[in-house]
Image (cartoon, rainbow, N blue to C red; front, side, top):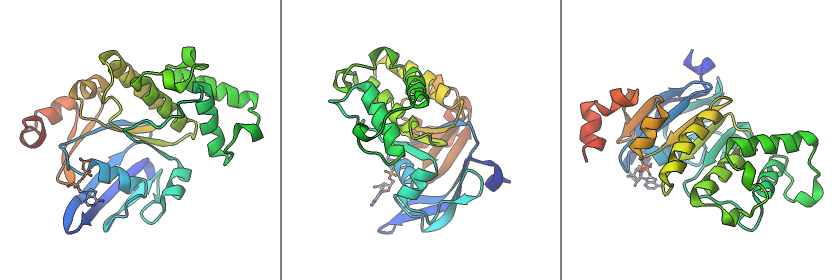
Length: 248
Ligand code: ADP
């Protein structure tokens, strides 16, 4: 039943690098429309987990299922992206010398395999989609401004918007609030909740205030496995979580 209903199902995934087990029989399930927070100490395997989901790294053991029964385990990165998994890396990579609008237009065209705005005219529907993304990522008022003029936090939002242009069913977001102001951090929690109204989102973060603000189910990883899973109150009171992560 996990395989047929979930957006993501990691089943007993292990991977080693030079004999070191980065993931150790890792299993968890993400439901459609769920926003899930992943926490855990450095070296817990959070990045490796993202690499496995996106096909950058192959598991030695176990399977990864997406959107029901789609087996990602032996698919490559491009195929997995095409199936509807978007990944936001920590460092934003927006086109600074382009406007916010043009960045989103480029992202929309990229999905179509069009790499220049010269060759494709936006339809009314495309324009409406870009406007909707601008609203979602809180950048409507800045749409004609150059991306270079955005704050670090706003660049993170723009890059999330560029990923939304690809219409992923699952969005993976790596440490979005690192370096953000407190106001941007609070807004990011609301923004991710808005996004999760129409798709699933997995967010890896260290900022416990932000995790608390999100108020969603948390998975704490340590040594490549799930240490605890549940509400932030449940997870942060778990003695194993305190010993391995919060108490450090
Ligand atoms: P986290 O993101 O939770 O900090 P990582 O997934 O980056 O954890 O790392 C888990 C462990 O696997 C770390 O000890 C790291 O050094 C090791 N590791 C990750 N990727 C590689 C790799 N490509 N080659 C060798 N070791 C790696």
